[in-house]
Length: 196
Image (cartoon, rainbow, N blue to C red):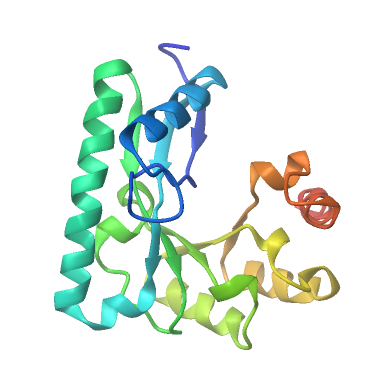
């Protein structure tokens, strides 16, 4: 697909060798090729990033420099093959602390105020609505990644509703819709979509 408006993907692990996603540039390019074949023309790739690093500026800069190198490699390689591709950067920020400093634009989705967030070990700790409200108070828009995959969340949908009331958006995984993660996440993502 070339030209015009296509689909956008804002949660992928394509930066090679930095997390549990693509291990090599070839693997990343294969992923982009599959996305292009599905009609995706804008990709914001989001490697994992621990929020606690924002409290240690030297470590934060070191980690971001590694991400920068990998991101520039994949961006430049994608641009050679697909010049019309809108390729952006972001991160999937693991909220391992309740009050991260998300002021660095590289931590957000494509330089927007939106930030893709998740909690450790697919568990929902207490106080998550307040953490999300704190992010909103900083002028940012939290987007909770894959809520349908959190352990036990199907019995606690009131928490998901509290996330939305706090100003967060939800982002479900394609794999959940297709059943890749099992019948539980599939049923839950369908229920969340039906509720809006």
